[in-house]
Image 1 (cartoon, rainbow, N blue to C red):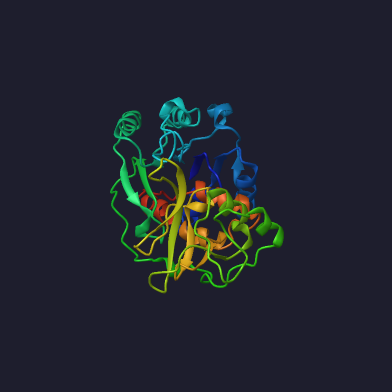
Image 2 (image 1 turned 90 degrees about the horizontal axis):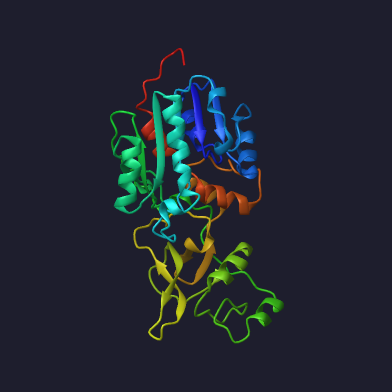
Length: 328
């Protein structure tokens, strides 16, 4: 079987095919992020990287049986600026469409975020199929809502595996990290993290979390609620006076928010008193990626590629319905 993976990232498609036991003769990966490529090559040395999709000569490829990819989603996402096809990253979708039009693979699979109906309809018209909408929460402890356009038959929702947050934790949030005097002095007069055990921060700004969240566990907002680990996110919300503050919003369903490249989107708490961010391995588990698959690069890059990646079990659930011939 010959596969072309566009916007390949860390080769989530290859992980899914491998998990299904599908023999891949050639896996062509179009990717430009050197760190994602480094992780792919470390795990699958036979992957053939073909570079930037906008510069790829499709005529140089052999017969391709499967084209798959998740084109950049920032322009379509509700959390973005809503530029849609005016975002230069979003128009890369047309590179995907050009590839399947030219190569005429037996199967294709396109993934993208939840978006406005008008954009959804445009993509569906080009793809010639309506998408299936799947939340990764069925196979993971992560809420991740995505559309999948494919001509693979017999699509269905995955069976709910009832995986919850506690199932993917490396360890529970516990003692906070003592911050340095230098850090404390910089925060004089500000409501933020402190390094004194008898004080609790009234709020935590996005910048402070991202800047200092790499150091471990933290003592944060007022303690209340049940003694279990829950996930929350810091969101900018308007105050009555029109100003904006970062406010903690906790989930109540024993799931995490969607993994993104922004660490404040997922923070863990126990008793709403002890805090830490997700570890790279926990993010791998949320994406149903093998533990330490991404440990060939820095944690910063691990978080980034996992946030941009696919939930493997969802992809495997879709791909399993392909008719795979022995000669592939």
